[in-house]
Amino acid sequence: MMTRLIRFNAWPQQAVVLACILLITLVGWVDYFTGYETFFFTFYLVAIFVGTWRLGPAFGALLAALSVTAWVSANIEAGQHYSNYFVPVWNAVIMFTVYLVIVGLLARLKKILGEQEERVRLRTAALTREIQERVRLQKELLETSDREQRRLGRDLHDGLCQHLTGTALAGHLLAQKLAGRAEAEVGAAARLVHLIEEAIEMTRNLSHQLDPVELKSGKLTDHFEDLAAAASQRFKVVCRFEGSLSQPIEDDAVATHLYRIAQEAVAGAAQRRGVGQINIGLDSAADEVVLTITDDGTLPPEKMPEDAEARSRAMFYRADLIGATLSVEPLATHGARLTCVLPSSRTKHAA
Image (tube, rainbow, N blue to C red):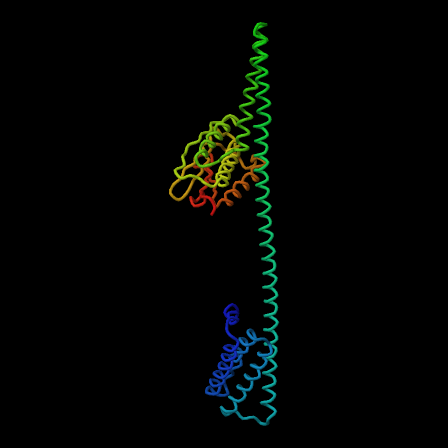
């Protein structure tokens, strides 16, 4: 009822005035034809309610006076007789007073509702600004994290890798100088060179994970293959990548977010108890690109790693940034599957 009456705010003022007067006139005629025994107090209230709500208490008081006049006139014309003139005047005053009380209550109710609507509007605007600021901060934190990872990856590749490469060359020279000496010393030098070369390879793989340069359509699957190989070596599990992209991912930012989601998902899957195999899938169809990470591990809730919640939030936030949908579901026997579905329209360069 309240909602329907509030819609009168959309009516022109002239239309409201005319409608209220016509309604009082109509009720007065019905009051006259039904006789003075029938009390039409409530029916006059409809016009008073509409007029007060739309045009304010002053107009409501005017409608109340018109309603009392119509009511008294209809009863007199219908044949009601009074012992003296004081009786109809008294009845009219009582009825007008009741109407004025109702008009005041309606005006107060409208004011309260208006204040509540304004508070809701202000709070909604404040909440919207807070959400926008939080989203902005989250995006900045994510971009800062990615930027720092890329910087660290470049430092590892350009700094530590080069230093280790120089150390390996020095080790080779040392091994050549020791070639004519004791066999044990030559073997130790060769062993040292081998360890340094392993360190170079591990550092290079780590730098590529932190800074996957040129994550473009033609090389994205190569990076996923490198991710699977690095995960197998790092987590001591069998990690395989299978998939192909029939449609290129032209937007580098989208490709990077997909890669980061896969990184987080693989790291999370590797921490599950009893995991022995992790499968990475990346396939494209006419209208979507689907990334899946499947593992065969089990892990009770109380054993969840401390960073699992942060990792999950990061993945869902990255998916939301690129317009993808992300879901995680347990498999029928054991293990879980993460699925990220990206519309193909989001793989194109932004206009």
